[in-house]
Image (cartoon, rainbow, N blue to C red; front, side, top):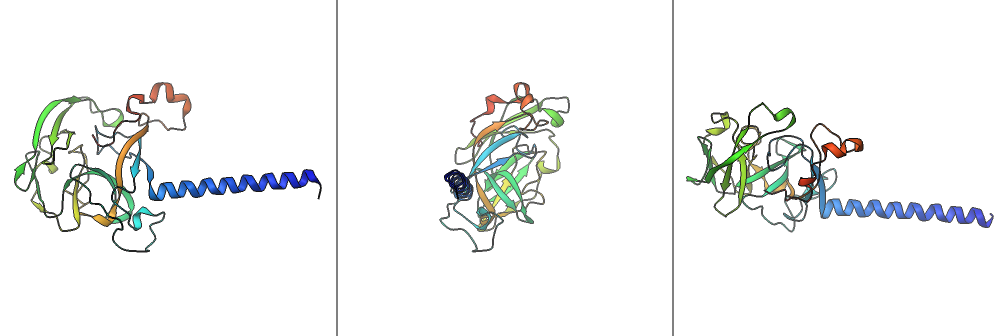
Length: 248
C-alpha cells in the first residue's frame, strides 16, 4: 500500500472516530443533562408558544426509565430523585400513553386537595391569589379576533406566573375536588381554557413519569414556520424570546 493510500485510510478512520465520539457525547448530554423540546400546542400560552424550542433539565428530578432513549425497563421509580416543586413547568410522559410527552405546570403536590371554582384555583380550600393584569393577543390559529384576559397567579410558595382565561364559563372553570395521591402530582396548563391536563383525561402524574424541568428557550419562530426555512427567519424569528426563562 502506498503512503498516500495509508494517509487517506488513516484520515478516514480518524474522521469516523471523531464522529462516533461526538454522537456518544450528544447521547450522554441528552440522556443525563439537557434534552431539547419543542412546544406542540397552545396549552401553555402565553408562557410558552407554539414554535418555542427549549431545554429540559434531566437531572432536576433525578432519573427514571423515561430519562433514557426508548425508555428501556431497566429499573422502576427514580434514582437520585428530587421532587418537583409547586409552580415548576415540567415535561412528563402521559400516564395513559407513556410514548407521548406533555408539558404543564405543577400546581398540586402529593396529599393536596385541588379544585377550580369559577375560574379560581383552590389548594387545600385556600384560593390562590389571582389578579387581572392585562390582555394578550394570540397569534396564528389561536387568534379568534379578540384579546384574551391575562391573570397573574401567585402560589402559596411565592411562585408567580400568568394565565389566560378565554372563556369564564368553560368546563375546566368549575371542577370536583381532586385529592392528589402519594407519589403523584396535579398538572395544569397556563392557558386554562385550552389545556388537556389533570382536570381531564391526563389525571394524576406519577413521579416516575417526569422527564425533566423546563429551563430556557434557545430558539423561537412563528408557529406556521419551520426552523429549516431560513429564508423566513428575518420576519418570523421571535428574537425577543431567545434565552428567556421557560418557567414564567
